[in-house]
Image 1 (cartoon, rainbow, N blue to C red):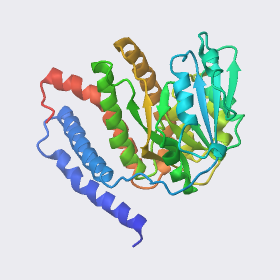
Image 2 (spheres, one colour; image 1 turned 45 degrees about the horizontal axis):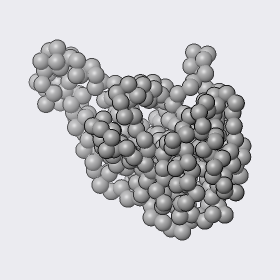
Image 3 (cartoon, helix red, strand yellow; image 1 turned 30 degrees about the horizontal axis):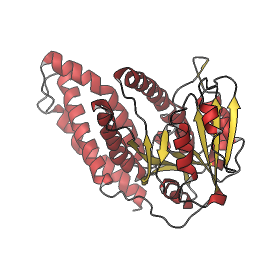
Amino acid sequence: MNKKNINIAIMLITFVSLFPLLFIRLEGFQASIFWLYSTLMTLFLIFTYFHIDKYRPVPDLGYRPSVTVIIPAKNEKDAIVQTIEAILNSDYPHDKLNVVVVDDGSTDNTVKEIKKIKNSRLTLIRHEINRGKRIAFATGLKYTVSEIVICIDSDSFVDKNAIKFLVQPFLRKNIGAVCGHGYASNIDKNLLTKLQHYWYQEMFLIMKSMEAQFGCVTCCSGILAAYRREIILPVLDEWLNEKFFGRPILIGDDRQMTNLVLRGGSKYATRESEVTYQSNAIVYTIVPKNFKQFWKQQLRWKRAWVHGTKLASTFMWKKKFPIPYYFFIYQFLTYMNPIIIIYSHRLRIPLT
């Protein structure tokens, strides 16, 4: 029996053995839902921690492809110089690393600050009006011929070795994108920034480490993400022209690009494309320092997550085992979380 059939057999045996338990000691439909949620959450956590224990980032193997870092920027006069200089000072061959900054209609002194940097590897492009991150990234992409394209937020600062480590997985030709690891640069500002820092560690070190084991990281964070140029070029127009009920999509740029890479680039592509994560490619980013900023960010991210899940659901079921099961169970648990919390409080049903 081959490996695929063994995996299917194990899956069927597991679910067939668990299914009768649904009828044991249940007191109505609500109890069944709570029991199912608790069981799936427990199994999901066991599955996650089992796989993150096996995760290891790819070490420096000496791979040095040509790289262009694109920085979409709007009103970042206080951070943009530090962002650019951190990249230019990276431990990476200077003849293989270039930076393209796209000023997206800034109304402060962002452009003036950028022009203070005198370096032949830096290119500045200006949009007279704000056109959004997607358009800015696409504009920057036109000025690249590099094999690898990196997108970084304009208020994020790479570690000296980040780019070197970030590109190592691309030695495998089926790797389409790689996500770096984020820290809060302003962690000591207040309690909110501290909480966000540790939340970042959970999402990166736990979720992305687990997803990386299957080559299926579902979102390359915009604070530091690398893409194989030949994969994203065919889908650039689709990404730019996404619509929801006839209106352009202005959120979820990172999640949607990751989706398109995971799909294999063009919807007609046949090559299996993978997305992974490098915990040793470190970037420091400025996180919201007050609740109003944080709330707006989280609303934007959650809307993007819902929209991104819609696209991912159209192809995730085609992925190899166990990706579809992990993906769809995770979606179920996520959407059930607020329902479980509300009903457990209302009915005084314990969650354990």
